[in-house]
Length: 494
Image (cartoon, rainbow, N blue to C red; front, top):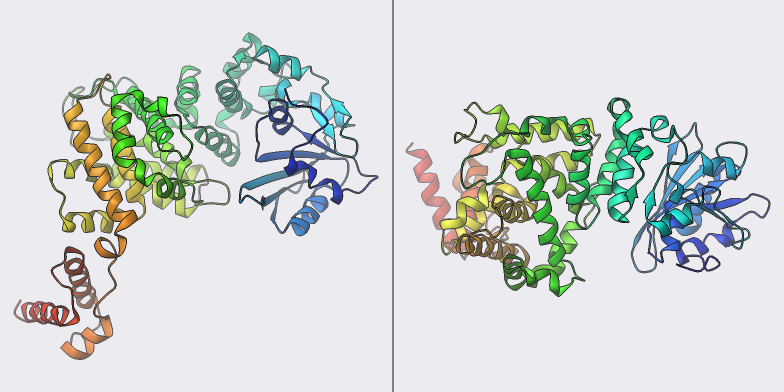
């Protein structure tokens, strides 16, 4: 374990900003990670005084972004990028209780109930013996009512148990089971934040399965309840819910081998080896795309796991006998995930992106038998899906692998990977050619030269011209004028 005296750099930078008579403590999960010599980017501080004022000062000094989390409880957040461009979240809260010891003993789990005094880093508090529990790899609450007092801690227990490979103590498990009804009434924003912490793991599938085992999954994602036991026709090897969990698992596998820093042994599986061989060249671009923020704190990479979990959620809403082939209406599933996203208070960008992923999730499957995929098909695919087309590609591969008891059929898998490679090649390397070519003519030119009235007809002409450019049928302004002239003639004779 790490030396107690040597604070992380992201914490040390705060020391010059301290007021000497206002104790500030580095607390919670950051201290736990410091003990384990793990880098951490979510840091918590307990302030014996005005935490909001101090947080504002930190944001000003570091050039970060500040917002108030809880005015009544005196909690503020600072978002800051370090010198390496890593995004840091620093939360400052007023000490709760009579002193720092009372604050720590009222926390969630013993491994999160440690503190370091920033005015004197040699002063280390561990009133609940959390360091020993961390060493013994057990997870237990700080008190008998810890989870009942804050039911969202049930979700946190699952995340911590999986992330640190901890055994949950029986009394803590009992608290989790006893708090299920209270969890239904918990603030949706806090539930959302815990869930997206789970989705931030490299492979969140194990945590999702543990949530399901503890009967928590259907509480936070009630739409999944109808997938339980819903049988599916071949080639599906699993009932609908188990299939969705398998898709989350396989998505974790795929994204793991596509990380910038990946373990080559993870690609020993022949299916993942195909991903590395055919798609590995897009590793940097994919990671940049998945690391984009659609809200202040949540990335595309986290969102895609929610899409995977919900990708079949519309199936029970479509009439059909158990086990019979269903005409799956993607629109229903898209509307359901959008509704759940609104309930969790996700941003509008996230809601739209989730809906796009589920509406168009079968587009790559349609292209499976198009060999080779034509420029027109590439253009129309991304015209439908937009930036969500990247997530749809990844979901289509995970969904394929999650359909079968391993190993999945190799020939069909190679076809699915080849579709992914072709689409990614076009998006990342030939965007201006196949997806968004520079217009050879503008709308006002069409209106002036061809006498077309401003309105939908102009948009239709521009779209057809744009597609013709993407397919290579039109390459010059002369050819563009010839095409538009023919199309205008056709419109006049309709």
